[in-house]
Image (cartoon, rainbow, N blue to C red; front, side, top):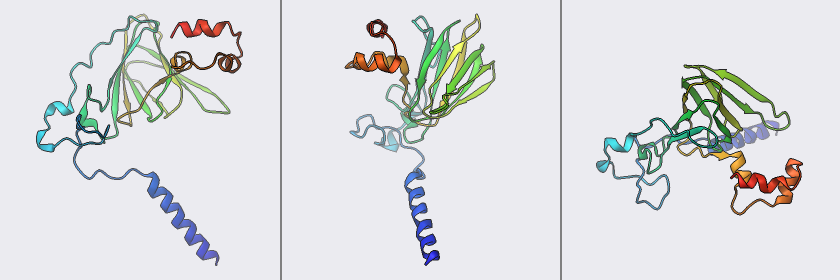
Length: 214
């Protein structure tokens, strides 16, 4: 009887693993059909694909003349980016940060990111989850690499007097990005003021001030 239960338990585990694993690709590629009603997985006729479906021109210097002093230029499996990334499970982003600029606290809900510094020096960090909320930080120089685990809040900051450039690779064709401050104070419709007041333990007069920034 015990052996039977063990056998059934192993079968259940195998079933769960099978459900949670990504299946192998059944074709070389699936270039996004931009006319398809399926958002990401409609495939363009292979006879109609060209090199342009797999390339992107313009991943150049980003405009950092904004409030945070940074610009993230993505290369995802979208119409404006690289349709050939569709179903391949990867994407990338170029990050430009002006002196003293930051890429604000944000999270990628569907991807782990690995960042390589191309120029300059960056302070980077991420925050572990409840209950510890540890801040893991490091100074990166040209050629250094850092990993931000999937879903964790993280940031990048330029700590030098020169422009910084980094390239991030993500293991999702659509990693998503949630900028924390924008989400909390710039949502539509707005999050109720009393909720934000209690969550941040601040005077209610500060909430409209914070909202006005986003």
